[in-house]
Image 1 (tube, rainbow, N blue to C red):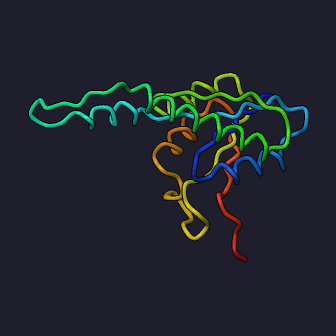
Image 2 (cartoon, rainbow, N blue to C red):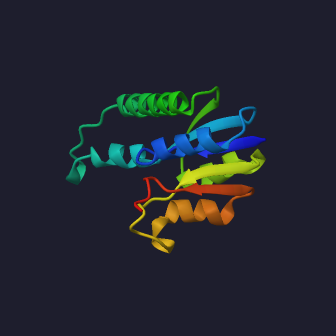
Length: 148
């Protein structure tokens, strides 16, 4: 069984815990984190109006972003408690997740909202796109513990 576990900053603990609890131990797991194209926007924001520009290399921003992605994936793998392929990408998040899931039998992802927010709004636009375009089965988990 090939499984893609989509890691997001706000919900990675719940996603990793669900993967650890529900996936067979012999599953081939890939932990995926996708950096958005925000670095491009941030670089443009540094350009001052009216042509006054303090242009600097975007390398520092890229390095920070890449290190953050590696750290988050390492934390998720530690929470998972087993070996996994770590895949850090950048681009349009929803497109990258669906593309990474092309060979997966299952995608594991978390809702965007906690339990008090039942219904369609518990999925944001990016997660909704992934669920709607998933080429495989989807395990959708809550990011919190339900109150009973």
